[in-house]
Figure 1: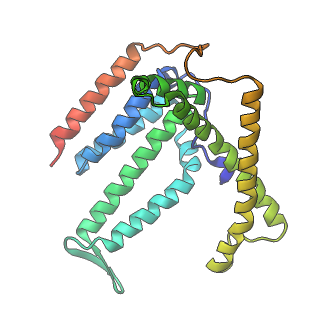
Figure 2: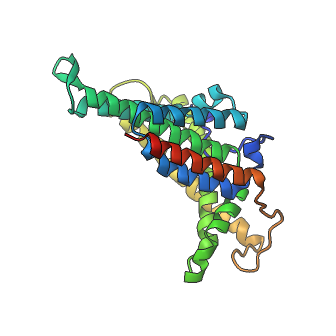
Figure 3: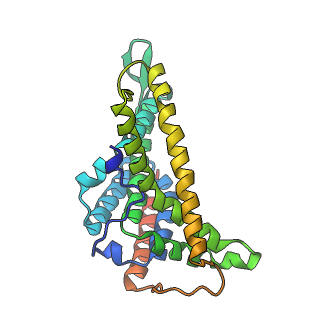
Length: 265
């Protein structure tokens, strides 16, 4: 499962999403995170689902590949669905399982929140899959440029976020290697009592933390050895260019927001 984790990875391609300016993608994702909460009925959620499917098709990514890569998140969504289903006690009772009752509003909220979670995960993952970490850093730094007037460390923050995204798949691979090494020594991660499974995580976390700190130290040493100096005076090999497709994306976002507001109940 760790090998299939795709969040934070970049998949080279030639789709329209790959060619878009990273600033337009960042603005769209930040905006989408806000407008997804405007949906509160079947019509608005159907529009959002259809829109995200269209974006996936435009990215030329295989839907099966996306679903397999997001399995750990899917389990979290299922857990959230169950919590809403059994602990939301608004509306009429529609089904009973022993002492647990499923209410009409609980089922409604469980479905809507799960769909909302799915949409947010797919959109943010598509951004990282179609944008290189370096380009994403440049776009984020460009958007936050006005904050430099108040002495905000824009470049350092953008670099930190870029490195974090870059090392997510690396840490996943490292976790997978450590798990296999521990399993070869007889450690069981997927069987036995819950108490034993929790204890088995300790031999996994300690070497993972040690490996992470070692990688961070090696990266810092490599940057210093190459004379890295971020911030003012630093030039860029590839310059960002806002094109017509980016403007079209902004227009589509405004239209989508207007439709969601119009259809709200």
